[in-house]
Length: 113
Image (tube, rainbow, N blue to C red; front, top):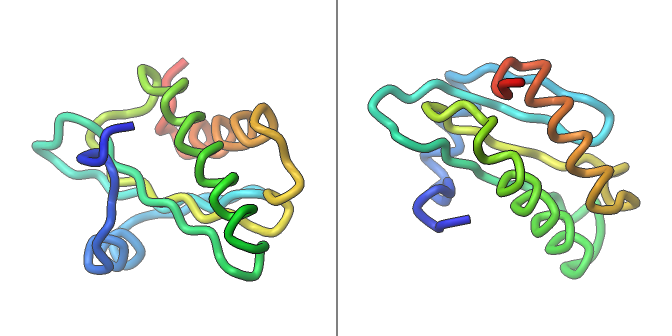
């Protein structure tokens, strides 16, 4: 995933949290906000220290980035998306993370069939 497609700044995160909508399942929470004039979606990842040490948090973020890469063609383009991992995510493998992410994206209508 290109770095241009990531949300990094605190102001961008806060804007999506305040103005956007959210959806969740047991493992993940997503906030999303439509951005007109944007040619590709942007994602921000948040994994709390409560979930585990740096190794565990980085593994979850790698899994989420790879899942977005594999779902790339199906994700709606004009959105900023923030993904927050919950505690059950630390025990999941890549396929479970991808399935959970696709579930949450499809429920929020950000994933096309």
